[in-house]
Image (cartoon, rainbow, N blue to C red):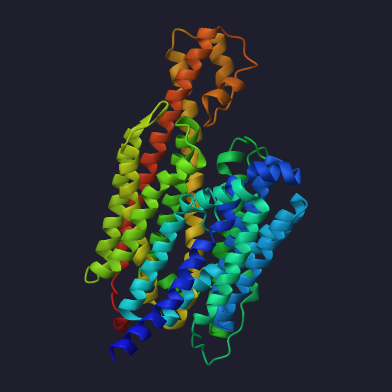
Length: 544
């Protein structure tokens, strides 16, 4: 009897292992791309702009169609939906491996992998409520959060997960040893093994009622999300109002904010449109249960803030470690393990050892830990490196993110019926993408504004600098850059050696202070989310 129970338990958790590896695998493509930039530029005769576009295509494609992937799963079945995503990823990775030019690489491989992610990620979150219930469901959601910790998110990427811990370490090894084609080929093999492993995933019972795909809603959602994500993710590059490096302008201003606002307007119209569609068809891209429930919103906030924090941390910490501290990719990855390891431990440990603690309490503690974590990180910053406080802050952040990841999806699933719980995967994945995009945009703006304000104020007070030099430098828009890059930006200015040295020193100070301010903003954003937890009232499915 004991042997039978043991075998049954193993069968229960085998699908979860497949889903965890899928969650980790969705980060692989981005991890390889993040460390293969130079190799791709050389082999495909690509420019840096080409590589950035390749990254964006994946992000926007995945982000725009996540919600649709969540609805399609309940219509055709989650297992089939999952396998479609895996197959698209396999074909996409193979195309990346054999690409002979950047067009094939971007609009063939990256597009297909992005589409695959829009099927796979909602399926991972949709299969869990369909397969597991009770304590097993809580544990399963925690395990997926732990898988996110292994991948330890990265960014700035609005459409899915990048790995900044394990990913670049493994990707860096494959690239150094065999080249980018073998690295992408290895990912194709990885997803093929997941496809084989999908035989362990049971069929989830589908609704007996014939459901109709919300095609109109899918198109409107894709357009709205596309415009919002591209607009908000480019604010730090294109500018908020005043154009910086924008490819075009709208009435003389940067296109970032107009595009993002247009996306919001379209998504608001989508909400109104979905009400009538649900009344007519019995299902919709955005079920009314999601919109009415404060608990669902609390869960979505938790999902969003985890990825806002992940994207924000990587945007602030990684450049500082590499540009200021001189860390290479592997050293940066090792530092990010300080986030990934405790995130993994908390995601797995909370469902097991804190099962009786109210989800509201766990989420609140998680938010507080995220807010507190920025303090040692901010104080650790030095003009030319970091102290041990950085690692302490990253560990605290990892624990907080793990606590949020362990409960976010379960909180959503508890608040709605079983069908909507399964469909919520697409909404949750979209919330993650939106959260990450907002984090990158807000912190990017803070960085740009404060670094220029700090540098300008310091130059005006500095007696070593001539008034004409200060005026010329203030006319420039300074971004976060290394000392060498900053010196290069001064090449068109006439100055004395001691003036150049002083400007480099002032820029280092401004760079440090701007990163500190951005970290504090990140902490405040995390703390504000505590107010969303008041709506969490349902802690057991039987009460729903």
